[in-house]
Length: 109
Image 1 (cartoon, rainbow, N blue to C red):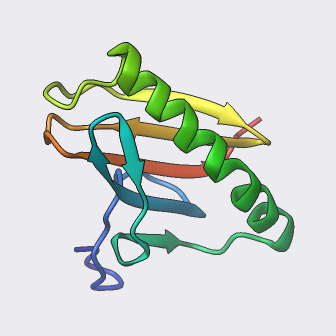
Image 2 (cartoon, rainbow, N blue to C red; image 1 turned 45 degrees about the vertical axis):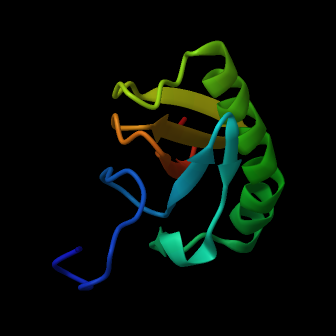
């Protein structure tokens, strides 16, 4: 729970905003997005919203490939960082055996 807004943070907790965070459900080497397990901190501008909508499927596909290769392991916490369309995605299973936690935010220059 975030003390300031008293809301649940589903994804990775990182400082700064705006950010989109979510807990993706892992089924084998596939990831499933559940809207009720996601949230936005801060405010994305219109261009950033379009970039996020375009980049999200790319990030999911990359994370699925990392699960397949073993780079992301459901049993071991290990954070990976992906970049696409001027956005950064951090992902980690946190050793949860069933979830991938993510945070997506504008890439800092």
